[in-house]
Length: 232
Image (cartoon, rainbow, N blue to C red):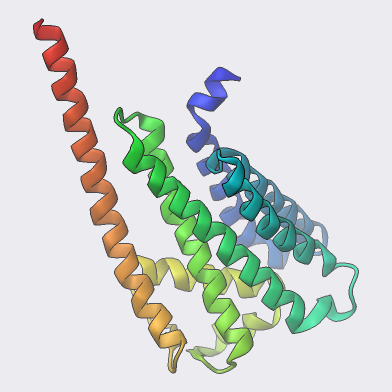
């Protein structure tokens, strides 16, 4: 148990990567594989909750968003036509809130750290990927509420009709925007999609710059404290 707690972010990162891998396979493997993917998403949300949120007041807000997201995800299997737009809007809003709050907590933890371990570095990677997932949910939410906010090439646009393929498209677009790669196969064409896209690009650059600077500064301070201690 102690060892698992010491490497909690490494475990969380492995779960997040499994979700992304299963997402790429879910649309093409019948009925069972999408359910496996949804189960992994549920595990990921619960893992984020357990690993990231340590304070009781934070957990109250986080658990409300997590429960809404999980219930909406599984309710699609019981509702006619998957629940339609309402389920999608509620799910994306809850996920965006939950993951955004998780990123804030991860960043807060990084800035509180005086001693940097390998697991803390992996925690910053988790924060980056969760930020991408939060922005992806916001982009999907915008597309629900303001259709035709994006132009997509024909093969990509056809995937917005499916639940899993839709999230795969916006996760892809979000991480491409976050890293400012910009392939151009998904393009925002009007507000608020335009605004969200440039805000995400700016956030991605500042996240890397600030987090790396904090990790380096904390590591240098840690080395100086160790050196002063050894010289006594």
